[in-house]
Amino acid sequence: MRNSIFRKDFLRGREERNVNEKASISVDACGYQLPSNYRNKTVEIYLTKQKLFVFDLYTGEEIVEYDLSPIPGRIICTREHRREMEKTAQELKALVSDMFERESWKKFTERNFKTFSRYVRDQCLEAKRYFLAKDVDIDILEQALEYCLENDTLSFANLNDTYAYFKRESYGSKDTSQEIETLDREY
Image (cartoon, rainbow, N blue to C red; front, side):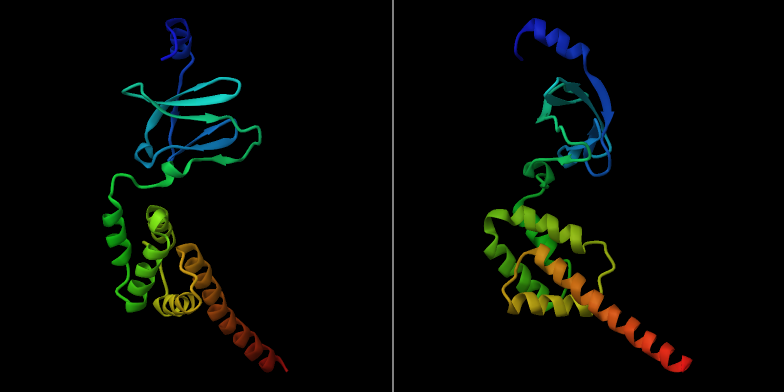
């Protein structure tokens, strides 16, 4: 560490914090992201006027250092902490590719991984967040996949937005037709 006097003061000022299920801690009404392996665990923090230091509770090693945010309500994170580092990129790609058995899903994931080869982990994380363990309407997903493939919009964020649009349109049209039927009956 820095010097022994600083170290003694530093250790005295630490306090424990619980990490939530999203792997973040709250400090002065702001959220600070930690690596995902600290999810639902306890860590130690040390605050200065400008910095937040977060330490592993058992090893005492520094996990991360952040500049404190002067704006309440912000979520502060680094890209590395959102990534799943315990799995290889190949394992993540295989998991995402196998999420749906549709040929269009396979085609989309292949093109996505080629287009965003430097950001495969980020893309896999988005795919899992948007489509894994959710009630996905396969017909609407198929429509969104075809649209994204035709228009070369190959990120999972774009696919999610397209899926949400087609889902709203699909359910919206039923609501409109029901409204019209109701109105016709009233007259």
